[in-house]
Image 1 (cartoon, rainbow, N blue to C red):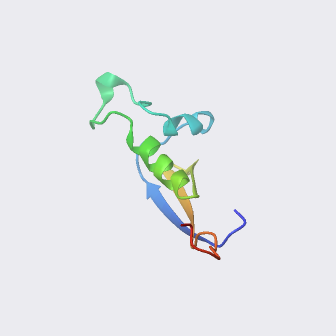
Image 2 (cartoon, rainbow, N blue to C red; image 1 turned 90 degrees about the horizontal axis):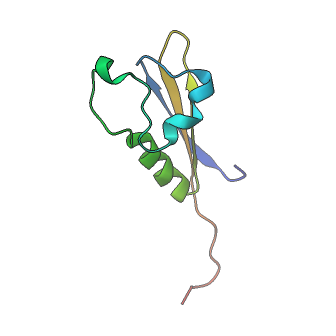
Image 3 (cartoon, rainbow, N blue to C red; image 1 turned 45 degrees about the horizontal axis):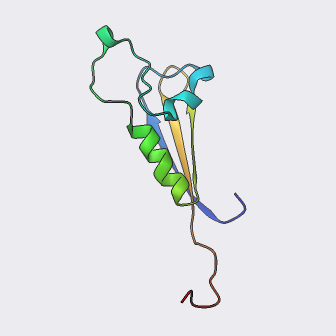
Length: 89
């Protein structure tokens, strides 16, 4: 990003996501745990919705696997919008 940004990191201590499948976790309804081994509910929409909100505000969201399991999710959001020199009406 070219503008000043605020950055937020969230570390997840779950089972983790294989490196080659990181981009898929942001797709709606994607879940990686096997149905008969599931310990939690959910439809696989949370990360897709979160990324959509972040991108709608001009930001970016990504994930990196953590050593030993889990992921680190990073959100970068612009701290200020573009300057408006005149009224829009």
